[in-house]
Image (cartoon, rainbow, N blue to C red; front, side, top):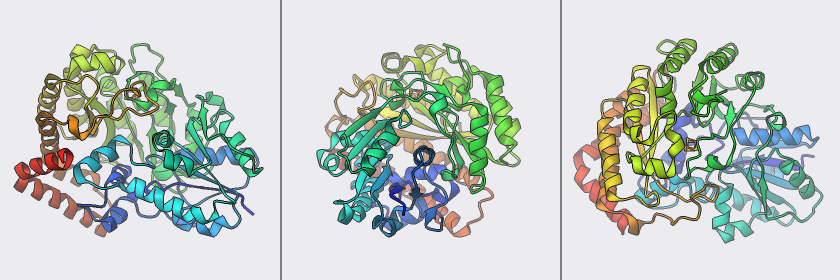
Length: 496
Ligand code: SF4
């Protein structure tokens, strides 16, 4: 009898067709884009064997590992199958990224398209399934989006315990043990940063082979949830061990850190430690044919362009791999806002050099087939018209570099240093904000065909590829035909 069931909303229990980037699509509300399309193309159900998922969100795999090491029997299942396990279960642990739709991507998509993001809809669907068993089953939530419960009393009351922060520091095992004994649980538990030696290795594959190489960041941007965590690097042996676990089920490995290029970096000016990073890549490459990266900072690219080239050589860029899609933060074109809210993000450069750093990084990445998916922030505290105009000018400078640029609305998350600041709402939108959104969209439309071609090169599932191709055509045609109207539409939706 398995008393602990682990799961996550269906939007997270998917490998997004093996294309991690497509996970962003799960933040779309089913309004303009129909629900069936979002489900089919952005979060198909992950494969299951003997009732268990074959891949699960990385954070959930860590929790699973902690509980197994502590001697508990655990089963990790897809939310659509959870009812089969609830007759016997005493505790359900749910990993959440964006359960209530307060994440920056969801808020932005919902502001433009109207409606609830799919992430929130799938969380509600999951809770509905558990509801009939709630007298007997305790519900514990945790993960990167757990802070969102602090903003909604209704949903806070619907769960037994919310774990915010890292789970390794005794927290998780204690809470689950108490839950199994039927004891009353504290409503909110705040986990402290774990020591590297207390972080367990995962025992089963994560979604798309994601493996954490560093935790925390250290640059200290005041709008970011990583601000409050210190940076720790996971030893190479542990990374390789996890990579081996993943490739049993996934095509390759995605090395994850807030900045992959800063692995092993101890320099206070954040100049990458080239030797350490290349050593890591070589080690992972020895166990996985395909190695890619999740995030990097633009400043690190410019500080060590040779590192980008060195990584490309190891992974076989242009041969085995056609491109890297890398998430990064462009944030703003305003040196004043850089200085005020994210001074450390520019290091080893100065905030006054930020626009040049961004352009140089885009240029280096373009030449090396690294395609940035760069986010910028609309509505940072104390933002002025002049700051937004500088950002528009910067985006225009980047036109010749293959990339996606995604504007996101500032959210004062509970876990960041700006949490006491005001929420940027529709009333705060001005004409120059719409102009910024339109300029970003122009940029993305300009590159959409090339990105589609590179991203799906060698992709075998013809129907899915065709669906995405049709989708990209639809976006492009609509934007080209109705740019002016769409700008008014965005304005009406956000302003109305
Ligand atoms: S560099 Fe990125 S991860 Fe690090 S604090 Fe800034 S926004 Fe957060």
